[in-house]
Image (cartoon, rainbow, N blue to C red; front, side):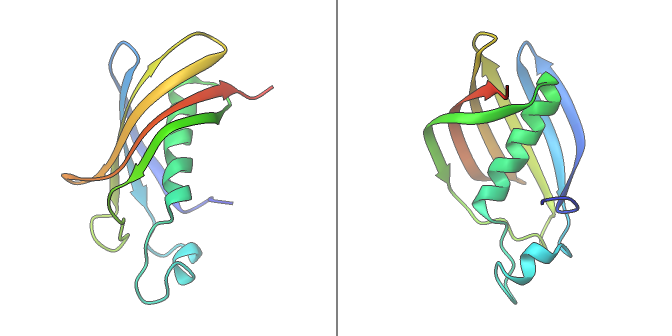
Length: 122
């Protein structure tokens, strides 16, 4: 569904269970023709999907969100501006569930903060 919308350019371990990724957003993707015509904005649910994809790649597991203690969208992502999202996250927990604390930013501007629990897909 989101094929072609974004590309994880880098995914780096910053220490034990701490990661940073740079994600390129494709401003020509068809999702922006409807959200919103003439003033494109990355849908929040797509930001959540990008974070999930980064975490799945870091852990090499298929994960889903199973609880969100906090999820704040603090700014809009206009794909025609920088086109690059910085995704920083810390993971904790056992094998069955991972606690995620993450921030997504565009340049210096934070666009999403989240505290969530993820579990492996059976």
